[in-house]
Length: 473
Image (cartoon, rainbow, N blue to C red; front, top):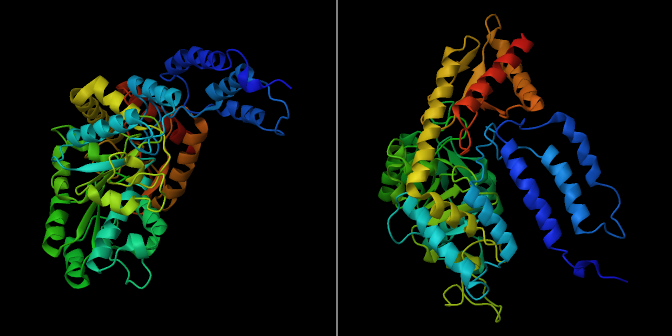
């Protein structure tokens, strides 16, 4: 029986097909719908029984490309405003292909000196990009949720030390509940991280002074004064409107009461890149841990989160792998980043980060952030000028929170109307943004973080929304 995996040109031919498909697909992103409803039926072509005899690489890849380029969500395009999702810069995309080509195991220096060095440089460049002092370290992980998990694991081990326990060795059994305090902006990914760490997702104590979720500093301080060592979760960039917790004030409280300050900066951390928005991150350098998502405003491909830790030695204590004599330890010169985070075997996700920062530099990212700030203000102005739309929040960064409010529709019916609008917007597919609930009101929350997005895309978004509103009333 022939071995299909060793056919001549078995790698070159499928790769050539991808190469040939890439340019027209990327060129189409500027004008294609984000979702083509008519292409959904093509997904049926992926299924069926597992073939006994495969069709070979070229035919299979041609089939996947035919379905994928038609039915994929164009989330890397300029009119995808949902979920705070960026695209992939050309350098980042090419480096991601390179990472797959080289197929390095970024577990440790001994498994890939190349992957280890690229990751070391990428982490330090990220530190410099957002203005953190020398000495900070970190770990690249798959998402902001894993970055929160990594950071809050370090916080858990810090807290365990104050209870006289090494939780990496003995766990949490017999210990009191770790106090975790936050304002109302705390994200569900932090709750999920706490859930995975064994604290429970409902361990977070929320201190909010209004329905939006702005932190009640006085109430949080009263709790800190009576609870002993605690973890504070601050939010740099709330997902509904882009607002920030007062990081400097929370850093003051953490210092006063000996708390661990964790900042969830999934996309908002990149406000530090521009002098126009850097003030929003004032005080972040006094945090103990920070998380962010590279596949948001950094515009690198999925999966790319990162955790930055003020005392990076805590990563090895939390995530080392003792008891395997063939593996290096966290402090071994042959060790590396697989011992500093939750994943051991891991792809070289540092390559796209390194490449995009090397290609475009600090100035390129400052220009992109500032262009997005301008586009968010343009979107806010268009909403304010539209008689059938109502903006619900200030726009400090890159998210515009608003709802449809056509003349003559009673207040009690607006939530239902906006839910229908959100569903129609996603089904229409020309642009993409979903609904949320902000201060008790159903609303849209388009986020502008894609390097391709222009004023034309923002204008098109408002035009589509208003056309759908007109159909509903």
